Image (cartoon, rainbow, N blue to C red; front, side):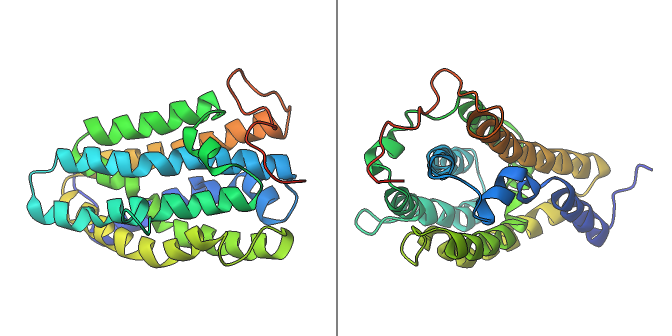
Length: 249
């Protein structure tokens, strides 16, 4: 009972976590991908998801600041470049703001993080603190939700293109790029976790970290559903459906 799982069995354990707990199974995503979301609901998703996207390079910078291994730092720093990009061209964050403009939102308003739901802010900030404070193995294991991201990005591209007038190659460029960026990140992260989780205690900690991250993602959609679908109760500080809107419904 105290022996670590084989590399293959442990990888399957991690993949099973995603199969059971990844947020592609949330009813809000089913609504979004099948064209059932109203313009208000789509905009609320874009606003709140941007807060998560904007904190990803911050958590990666926090990770790098703790990392003594220069090889690990070199492998990890491309994540900052993917999201922040160059000064002129920009990266994933600017591509997300193109999506915001396409759905009828002011990009500066979205970037300001005004109107982000309190539960979204709480969950995302908890993830940044987790990566900043927990052992490196736990921090890297938490990133392995990327194992399951390409599937949801592909489904999102197909669903949005099929059902929403705002969807085109420019507005969905964030997701197109992630189809290319995520596989290299996850290949490195998965190999690192499988190689360094060499005791049952470390494997348990890595699995718990991945579960924590799926909870972070799921709780964001719970907050959106509660505020803008059912029961439709927007908490204090949440987006009111009008601020920052530039387009018609």
